[in-house]
Length: 400
Image (cartoon, rainbow, N blue to C red; front, top):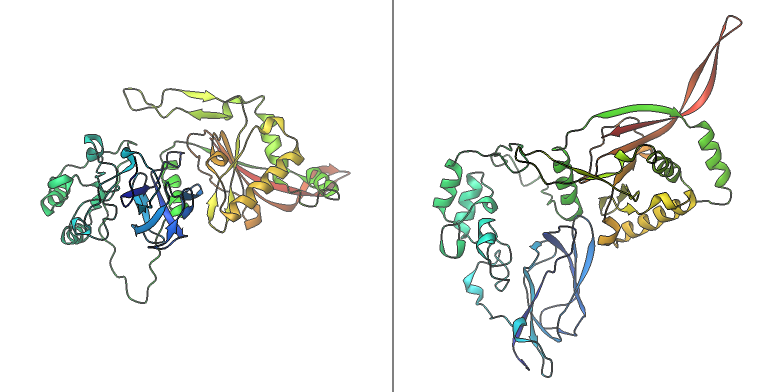
C-alpha cells in the first residue's frame, strides 16, 4: 500500500550487548530536510560503541525528538519522517501522529511502542522510556531526593503523581536484586553559578555502571613483582624490525599460555542464582578472549582480543593496534566487545605500581600490570661481601 503524506517514526534499534539506552552524539540532518531510505540521520553512542542510525524510508524529516547529548531508550522515537509520494511502507510501520500538547517537551517521543504490563512494572512507559509526570511532580521528586524513574505511577497511562512520590518515600526499604542495599541520598546542595555541572553519559556512564557492578563481585587481590630484564631485552631486539611492538602482547601471550595449566582462570560466570541467591555455576571457556583496557579520548574502553591462544605475539600486537585505532576513532563495534573471558589492564605508562583491579562481568579474573622499575637484586654473600645486580622489575596485581 502507498502512504504518501503519512508519518512514520524512526526508533532507536536494539544495539546489542544488553544496551538499553544511548546518547545522541550528532544529527546529520535537519528538520524539513528531504532524506533517502537508508541515509544516516544521526550518530549515537553507548558505554560500548558508536553507531549510525539510518532512515527506514524516503521522506521529509518533520520532527526530531532528542537534542545532542540527550539520552534515549531503545525503542523510543528519534524522529518523524513524512513519506514522499511513490514510497511504500507496510501498515505495521505506520503510527498515529500525536499532538505535542499531550506531553511536555522533556517527555519526547509520542509514538514509541506501547508498553505492556511488564514494562509498566519496570517503570517504563509508552512514550519512549520516559517517565510520565508533570513538571510540578518532577520538581517535587527532586526536592524530596527521589529518583522519579524508580517510582511506579498510579495516574493515567502510568503517570507519576505527588502521592506516588510520597508513597515511594514511605515504603519499607528493600534490597535490590544484587543483594546490596543502596541508601537513598539527599539532593546535592551548595551548587553555585560559578561551579561547572558535567553530565555523565555514554562511555563514561558505562564506566560508572561497570565499576558499580564490579563492587558486587567478591574477590581477592594478589600482588607481586617479577624480573623482566630478559623480556625487556627481547622486546628491544624485536623492535628493530617491529617499531610499534610494546610489552603488552608478551604479557597477554604469557597469560594465555598459563591458562593451559589453569583453565579455571578463563571463565564466564552464569548470573543465574539458586534459591539462596548465590551463583550456581561457571563455564570454563575454550577460547582465550582477552579484554584489553584502552584509554581513548572517548573514555576507557575494554575491547576483546579473540582467540589469543591461536595467535603469535606479533599478531596480538597488531590486533591491539587495530583496536586502539578503532577506539580513538569511536568505531568499536559490538563484536569488538563480545565474549570476553579474562581482562588485562596495563597501567604502567601512568606511573603506577600496584593496583586493585576489579573484575568485569561475567569474567572471573583480571590482572593489572604496573610500570617497569630498576631495582637491585640480592645475589648472596661471596667471600664475605654482599653481592647485588640491577634488574628490571615489573609489578602486577591479580584479582580473582
